[in-house]
Image 1: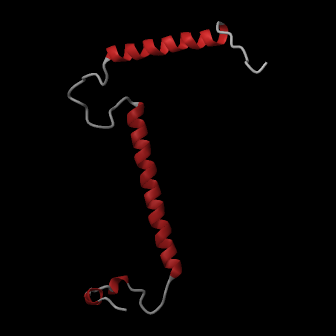
Image 2 (image 1 turned 90 degrees about the horizontal axis):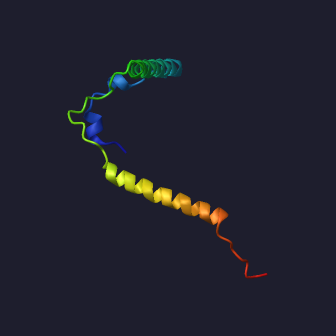
Image 3 (image 1 turned 180 degrees about the vertical axis):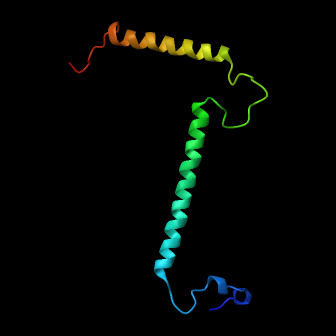
Amino acid sequence: MTLPFLSKLKLSSFSYGEYIHPLRDWFVLLIVSAVLLVASVGWNVWLFYRVLNGESLGSATASTTPLFDTASLSAAQTVFDARAVEEERYKKEYRFIDPSR
């Protein structure tokens, strides 16, 4: 099965020619992989040193509005404190009787 639009394209630069060269293909694959690895390591080192020096990675925000309401945060903390007190009462104060005995 041949696709007519593919046969019209000039794909001779991607052809192997008369002989297949797997060694050349593996070397190209390894070189491209090594270049990508070096680029990735370089990028990560650059970002690490920016963070180490206290610089920002993204653009600075113009507004410094708080992300959450402190009143709701303190209300949630109050609820958790009440739950902690009740948990201690279950451990030390309340006595449960096993009805199967």
